[in-house]
Image (cartoon, rainbow over all chains, first blue to last red):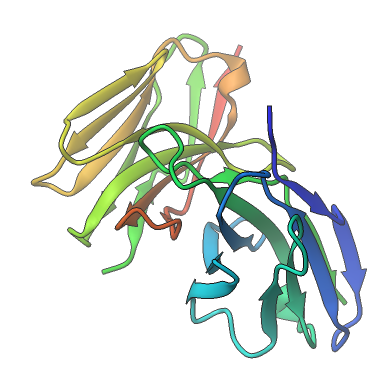
Length: 116
Length: 112
């Protein structure tokens, strides 16, 4: 079964450092997303990406965040200067043009970011 | 208006019991209501979803009940099993986008 893969599974970084989280969405999907989940809290939308540009972003997704699809397979989330409050699990998700009749999102297993 | 409120926060049932998790929303523009199941260390996985034009949907042991006028929907798990122990999130979405608004989650424990 096709799946969304994410690397690294866990990254520890010092405050102020840049981190890049990587995702390989399902190969024929067109829409890509990043969500995050602070420990013990709900999953929150960060950004959606379609046709090589951001289609929507949340208020969390400030100037410190950026996304990129550098080639035909990878989708990355960069945090320019990490803060303690960026510590969370970051989930990549992708969606095809249609999946059945629901437009289902497929989530990866997440990248845990710990900022010290 | 963008919130989805979920209750209870946690739930413990005996094997065979029927846990019920409730969600409420405010934005009438939402047109798709999925439930996700999440095991520790894993990403959310779609369990079942409903659109507001139906009042109930069943898939196996999982049933969504939807009350459009009350802006509420709930998940029922029939004949619950210890393997159902997980965190369950309701969510809502509008306009066939991928922007899901998640509830706070319910941690379910099914005791053998």
